Image (cartoon, rainbow, N blue to C red; front, top):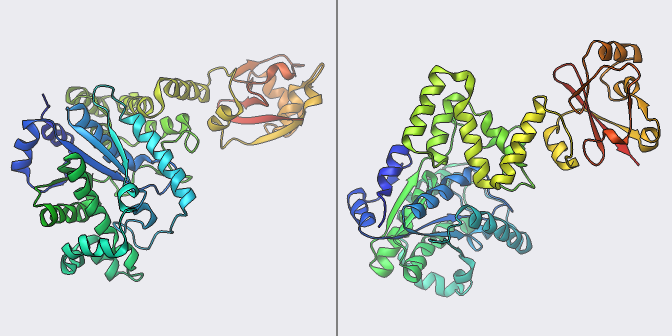
Length: 426
C-alpha cells in the first residue's frame, strides 16, 4: 500500500512543476511505481544542493515506491548546460570513476532501506554500447532540433556570450535516452529533479512517446535557495559537502545551526522528515522564542544524523559544546582542527614540555595571547586564563605533555573567546 506522496510533497512546497497532475495523482496512488533522479559525478562528493533530489527519492521510497538513483558516468563526461553560463571543464576517466564511486556510496547510505532497497545505476553501462552512428539513427532522429532550441537551458546559452558547443548541446539527448532506457529496463515512468531540469525531463518524456509510445511523467522541485535568491550550501570557504573528508560533521552541523530564521522553515520542509505538526510548532517557536534557535537545532540534528549517522551527530554536538566552553580532552588533531580551523596557532618544541614543562605565562606570549609575561600573569591571576577550557589561577602553572588535548595540540584561551592552539613540534 502506497502513501499519498503528492499530498506530502504539496504541503512541503516541493512541487514546482509537473507534467500531468490529474493523471499522475491517480497513477501514483494505484500501486507502487518506479521513479528516478539523476546525479552528475562532477565531484567525489555530493553537496547540500544535491539533497533536494536525494530527499525526493527518499520520500518516494518511504511512501512505498521503487526508486532509482542514476549516476551520470556518461553524461558526466559532457556536463549539463542547464543553469550554466559557460561550459564545464571535462573530467578525465580516472577522476570520473572516483567520483562515481564516491557519490554512489553516499546515495546508498541516504537511501538505505532493507525492506525497499534503492537501485543505483550508472548510465555509462548502456551509453557505452552505442556507436555514434547508431545513436544518431536510433535516438537523434526522434529529436526535432526546433524543440531543443526552444528549451530554456539551450536558449539561455545561445543568447549568451559563450554560446554552446555541440558536445553540451547533445547532453539533452543522452539524458532523455536515460529515461527511455530506465522505462524499458525497470518499468520506470517518473523522473524527479530540480526546476532547472525541466527541459531535460520533458525531453525524455517526449522521446519515450516517440520511441516507445510510453506515457511518462515528470516532477520538478524548487531549487534550494535562500530568501535573497542565492544558493543554499555556499559559504565563503566554499560548498558544504556531504563527505566528512571535505566538510566535517562539525562544520556541516554548524552550517545548519547558523541558518537565518527566514530560511529555516523552508529548509525544515524541504530537507527533513519531521511531520507537519512538528514543523508548524517550530515555526511558532521562531516567532515567539527566536532566541531558542529551536528550528536551527532540529534542522542541524536531523540532517547531521542523516548524513553522518549517530556518531557524526554526537561528535558535532560535542565539538559545538567545546567551542562554547566545555572542557577539551581525548580529541584527534583532525577533530580539534575542524573546531578551531580559523584560530591562530604557534609551535613549541616538544622538549620544552618534557620534564617540568614551560610556564603558562610564557606559552601565552608564544601563542600571541599576551604581549608580555606580565600581561599574561595579570590574565592568569584575574581568572581569565584557560588551558583546554579549564580555568587556571596558579601563578607558576606549567604546561607539560600531560596537557595535550589531542596528539599534538594544547588549546589556550584568554577571556571568553580569544583562543590559540599551541602545536607541539618534534
